[in-house]
View 1: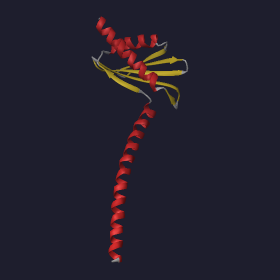
View 2: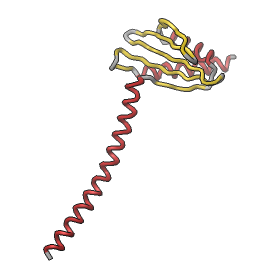
View 3: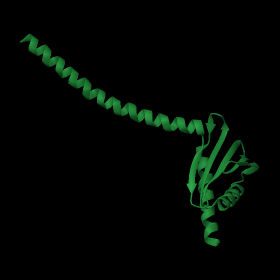
Length: 142
């Protein structure tokens, strides 16, 4: 009788442990996924968007958006498949990459930072939104 009780208790403890550990695995995988996304943003530090407008229109829209936002372009350099633009706003250093994917698709990557560890994702997203909005206005006028 005592032996059956021990066997039942051991089986119950193993089953309970498996039930509890199953939940831990889901939590661990969720934490791992969010750590990966955070790590990817910290490594690249850029907010990226692909838009269905040609390179020239997006560059023009970007320059208008930066001007309206009082962000000053310091220099522009050609890169493979596009252009890299360096700009400043108050204490922020901004790096923007424009890459032509096809004749009617362009990818924009914006990185805004105060220093290596202090990135400003909200400003980068706003630059993308304003550029896209102005590009739409250029299309409707043209």
